[in-house]
Structures are given as C-alpha cells and as structure tokens.
Length: 285
Image 1 (cartoon, rainbow, N blue to C red):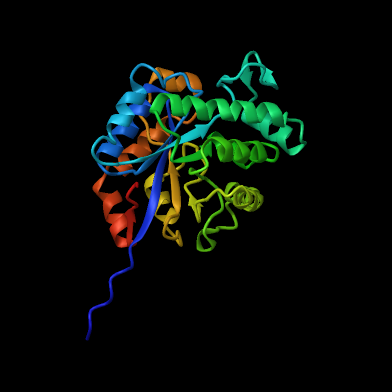
Image 2 (cartoon, rainbow, N blue to C red):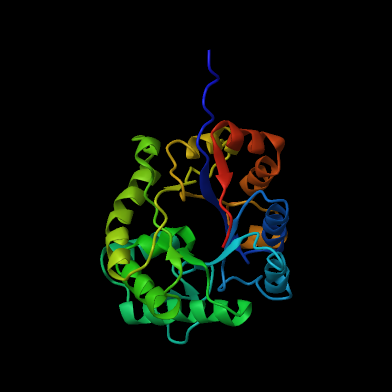
C-alpha cells in the first residue's frame, strides 16, 4: 500500500497590524518577525509611537535578508489625529470614532478630496521614514473598504505607490461561516473594493482571514486553525500580537488578547498547525 501523498504547500501572508500604536506592540511584532513567525506587518504612521527609533528597529530586521513585507496601515479613526492640515470631519482634533466614520461613509457624508489628501500624506510619511514606498497598503479597522474611502484610498495608492498591493477582506469560499456577521460584512464590502482595485491596476490578496470577535471569551489558539480553512496560496491572515503597556491601554480596547495572540504565534503548537495543514509563510521579495 502506497504512502499518502503530502499536502501541497500553500504559502500565505501572516500580517501583524498596528505597528506604531504602542511600544509593547512594536516589540512583540519585531520579536515574531525575527523568529520567523510572521512575514508582514502594517505600520500606523498616524500613531504616536512610530518615532524614537521604532522605524529603524523594524527596518533593521530586513537588512541582509527580507524577513517581512512592510505595509502602511492607513488610519482614519479615533483616537488618532490626521497628518494633513484641514482634514474634516474631526472632533477635538481627532478622527471620528469608527462607528461614526462608518455611518458617515455609508451615508456619503465624508469629504473625498480631504480623504485623498490625508491618505497621500500617510503614504508620503511612510516613504520618508522607510526610504521607500510600502510593499502593501491596508486600513486600520478595515476603513479602506468603506464607501467614499475606498475610492480615495485606491486613487492615492495608485498615484503614490503603484507597485503596492492592497488588502481586500473577502474570505475564501470554504472559510465563509454564515453565522460570522463581521466576516459577512467584510465579504460584501470587498466585492466593490476588488473591482475598483482592478480598474486602478492594483493587485489584491486572493483571500482574507483573521477577523473574530475581540472579547474576553475569545480563544485565539482554537480560532486560528479555522483561518487556514480553504485559504489559497497567497492568502492573508491578519493578527494583532502585542504586549500590554500603559500606552496601549490609553489608545485601544484590544489589550490582553494581543498577548494571547503573541503567545500562540510564538509556540510550537502554531508551527505544528501550519505543517499539519500544509501551510508555510511566503518569502517576502
């Protein structure tokens, strides 16, 4: 009796979001890149903890050998502040809260010209800091998928970083759980996003995973293997590893779950899960 054939290797992107939000998050992301546990991170140029050597420490990991693709995490929601002058709408100098940004986008009450200026400013800030355009561009809290925002986003990327690919949030068919309301919303929003990205000549990831409900009952160790279901070669999983510090507590409600994600991604169990499902991390070009 012949031995079973090995599973074909699917090479995926495992992207840690939010580099720049807090020192503890930055540290955790760099550790995972250095250990070969993730192969991409997206950087928040509008976040308060991107200075003080944080850019240099991240860029240094790619010296000699490319360990991670580096992208821009376009940020358009509170508690962060715009990089461009005259951005609106704002409240007390900050972007609107996510729910208000989403409501304004759905009712087409955002200002497209100001969105374009702000996104271009964040792209320029990335290039000035890293000495090159980003490898890819995505959005904090998936803002790039929203009506009005997506047009400004895609136009700004096409004009300022045309070789970058952009993140869409549609899941692989086999990974579409109908009870996952968050995933369904991202699937729907991504339909138009993919079509418009193609018109701008921008590449997108073939499938997306990594969204789950961030609450105290979440078990990342049990949830992660589901993200691999049906994920094709080149698919992307987002993650949010980090260490909790006072800076993070002051800016975000996603805290201790970040430490759970780091612990799992840094474990032997994570490596065994990838091997069992015939998955490996893609090699950054």
